[in-house]
Structures are given as structure tokens and as C-alpha cells.
Image 1 (tube, rainbow, N blue to C red):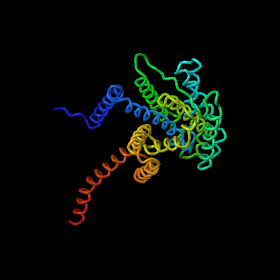
Image 2 (image 1 turned 135 degrees about the horizontal axis):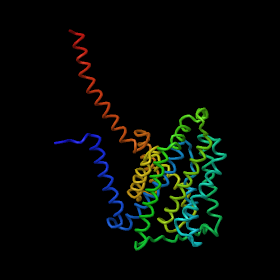
Image 3 (image 1 turned 30 degrees about the vertical axis):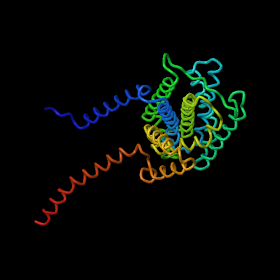
Image 4 (image 1 turned 60 degrees about the horizontal axis):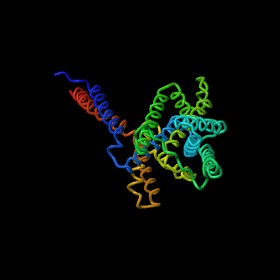
Length: 336
């Protein structure tokens, strides 16, 4: 009987798991109730927004706290453009481009800042965007809010359409970010993160790489905001405030801000914990803080790094087990 090599067996098993997972995701509207489907949409939306943080924080090393503001641009921009008669995909694209331009505008002065100062500057932008959402009543509805027109796909109901929109955006965004990570741009971003000053000698423009990271992260944030609007069905400015920003940061760092799959793991944990702990009210934040502290303490690179750490531990044990008999042979030879 012919046995497949270990790596082929692993790939085959991984492929089977991926196929089963894809079938479950595609058939999810028929497997769960409407509220559970709503939670699944939230997971996909938060994960999509977290992918923008992978680019800007995980790979380029910039502490940017403006993702909630970019989500607001995408949510309000898409909803307003759809109300004017534009198709939803075109409205999402235009809102994303506007957010990307805003990201570049912020990035031009912000690229000269680092660490704490960059974080404060981008947090100030997020607060400015929140104020604009409140004051721009003709567009956003102000404090009174804005009703979101639901998108319906074919013969699907609103819930099913919402799920496939969120799933599709998350899948396309994850694929795009994965491709960027394996491209020259991804390598340049990580080079800027690891050696900001030295990359100039390699003919790499740190400023250009950072601006691209700002633009791409803002664009992804706007995509997530457009999906978020569909999930919530009603928008008020304070939705895009500090609470959402904290949740996005927890999603990114809990899952692993350097991994494409990290935001998905983080979003599942955050949404799951929020549901399990909804009865404790304001103590939720303390619970989130404790969970984040434990993960950062034991898994500094997030839950997504657990697989690589387990693999490294197995390799160390294997190396130790093979080295021990050799050491015994050497000791015996010296003794004789």
C-alpha cells in the first residue's frame, strides 16, 4: 500500500477542511436563525475592518487609531450615494476611494510622526470625523440618525443578502490583503516597519510605502463600514466612536495583527464574548481587557500564532529526542 508523504497528507486534510468550511459558510442562512446570522455578519464585518489594521499596524508598524472614522465614511458615504440612485457596488467603490484620499491626506503629515504622537494625531482625526458626522445633518441625519436602504440579492431575503454581502467583502478583502503580503509592496511595508531609516539605502521610499498603507487601510475600513451599515440598518454618529475603535483594536491584536487570519479569529472571540457577557453590562470592558492581557502575555503575536508555536515546540522536542541518543553514544565512546 502506498502512503502519501506527510506534507501531502497535511495539504489534503487542509483542503478538505477548507471545502467543508466554505460549504458551511455558503449554506449558513439555512442552518442558523436570524439572530445568529446577524452575529455572523458582525464577525465578518469586524474581521474586514481588522484586515485594514493588519496592513497599517501589523505590516507597516504605524499606530493608527482612525479605522472607526474610515468605517463611518464608508457607511454614511455608501448609504447617501445609494439614496441618490447609485448601485450599491458603485457607491461602495466611490466611498472607498473618498476614504483612501482622506487617508492619504492624513498620512502626509502623519508620516513624520511615530509611536504615541502618531496615535494621538490619528485619534484626533477620528474624533473630528465623529463631529462631522454629527454636524452634517443633510447627509448623515445628525443625532437623529439615518435609515439604511437594505440591499437585496436576487430572490434572497434581506438576511441572506446581508450575509452574502458581508461574506463576499470579507473573502475578497482577505484574498487581496494576502496577495499584498506576498507581493513587493508587502515586503516593502515590513522593511519600513523593521528598519525605517535604513530602507532609504535600498531605494525604498518609506514615505511612499506609509502613504500606500494609509490609503489601503482607509479603503478597507470604508468597505467594512458599508457592510456594517447593512448589518445595523440604522446609523447614528456615536456608533463610530471610541467603543468601536476599542473593539477593532481588540479584534486585531487578539487574533494577531500580523496575520491575515488574525482578525477573523479575533472577531469570533470578541463577538462571542460580547454575547456571553452581555448580562454583566459595563463589566464587559473589564472582561475584554483581562482576555486581551492574557493573550498578549502568553501569545504576544495573537491567537493566529498558536499554530506556529505548537509546530516550533514539536520541532524542539524532535530535535531533543534525536540529540539524546547521539549524546549518549559520544559519552560512551569517551568513557571507553
